[in-house]
Image (cartoon, rainbow, N blue to C red; front, side):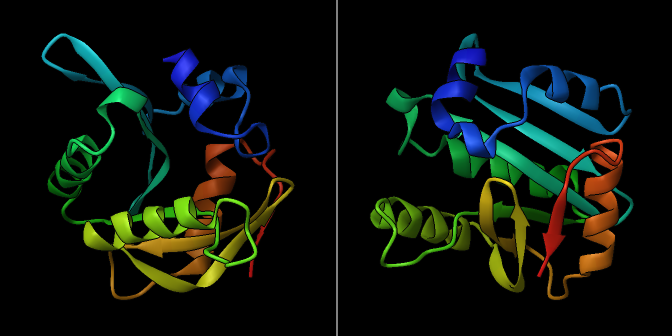
Length: 160
């Protein structure tokens, strides 16, 4: 799980492992390994609030990507949290980005799985990220509160 976390997310987009573990001390924060029977296929990091669930990380092992695991995880999350909106953030899709094709594919994947862009971005020391949600309305104040609670108030960010 550790190896996948470090390989799937750039350093600027990762919390330290210690921070992740500390955050999971909160009752409604989960860092989870994803298995297909006994085979490790991925990980996710979830922060559950009263009205929304923040999907901070979702990664599938490289040789299992494109086989529907990510979509299945999102479907399970939608079923398990059907009364709440799912929220996540991704790198913005800009043609000038070196990994434009990867960013575009990621956006398409999430849109295909019921997410849509909000008109808000998350900005932190790692950069700027487009916020996506499964709900019709997005409340930036609620999301901001969830992120502050998640990080014990230590995560520095803005919602723009």
